[in-house]
Length: 315
Image (cartoon, rainbow, N blue to C red; front, side, top):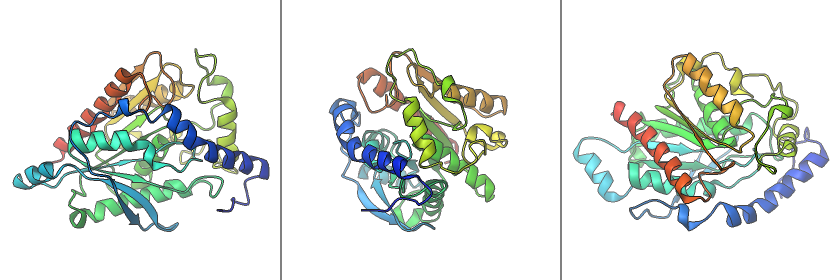
């Protein structure tokens, strides 16, 4: 069993281990319906690729587009693009397979490779380990495209929940290092303001999925000892928004994280960034992986359209 970061108190660490243990069952019951698999072409099971990072090797699931798509791209003198899908789970869960339906859809309908990194989480580590691992995966994908037959210049990134925050952090770190940013950013029911008072996280639902207790656990584990108003911790306070790529923001009516994401989108728009914003009525956190089917289908279509447009503009 992995050890806990010593700066995370025992009670919080125990709660995080319990959350990790129970999540696979929750995922199986609520977020793994075959009805939210929308790929229309057969996609092979993912390969496992070991990617070196400053915190050790990260196993990534690699989904490939159909061979016919690869051949068609080659005839045009192109390599397929690649999307990095960063899974969620309150910075505690380690389960990249959550993004299987998104990965298969993008590989099938957009014709891109898709990488799902299995980054480290609390209570084993704290901020900024996951952020740095995801950025190192991005840099690796940028520089190893030809050996894996994708275009290292056409990389998009996105994810739901905690994965949205980590995807945004990759953009921030690229700016920190003067490296090219992803061609597109997508976020689904994300979090960007860890400093926001829980009293402001409201929902029309009687029992929203992201509760105040869950946010408290996130702060006391992965973000223990951090400055929550730092832009590296809470991208809501980022001042370089004008340098962000085109951004897709998908939210849910009942999600307690919706307000901060809507406001983040407004800040991006004010900075001149092309933003596509869509709020889905009658659903809560995790809508890209759960029924109703119509919402999940539309959400994945929007993600596909968003990255497809960016790939075309950079071809």
